[in-house]
Length: 67
Image (cartoon, rainbow, N blue to C red; front, side, top):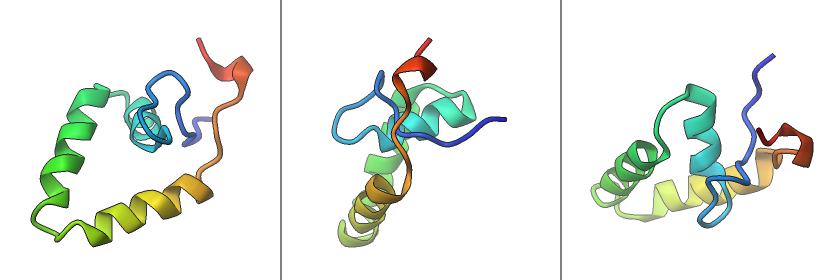
């Protein structure tokens, strides 16, 4: 069963966006670019707050999960 986890491999800050990219099997650069493009028109606060909440809610990937 596929689970959403914060990525250790594609981590820049907390691994949330890397984990989303791995979950949906798309390039992490695309996820980061979309996130960055959405942060600007939303006024920064909502998506940054969502990222911080996700950082605490989404569990980190286990060492054995890394391929």
